[in-house]
Amino acid sequence: MATTYDSTRDPYLRGGELQVNRSSIAVTPSDTVDFASYPRSVVVTVAGTVSALPLKNADASFVNLGSLAIGTAIPFRVRRINATVTTATLVAMYD
Image: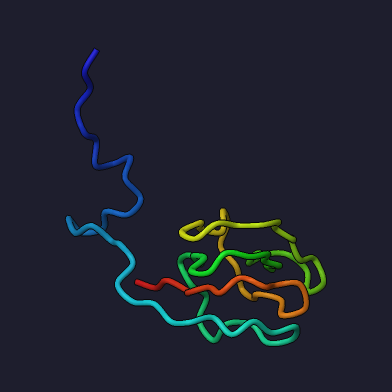
């Protein structure tokens, strides 16, 4: 059964405009410094491991993600990428 598109179910559509990532910056992992502005997403550009601190986790509650392939997006929003465990190269994506 075919269904039609329902814009009320699309969280990235605001004011009739599709809200997608519009800019990105290279991530510099740090064990102590959060992002100056929290990104919408973080994407792997060179494969490796990632240790990420989700937005609402306590400071020491990092999530270690094993070998991630190029193009993988971290599956939750983050406020910091930990330098100690991270070997991947990443970009932070913003509106």
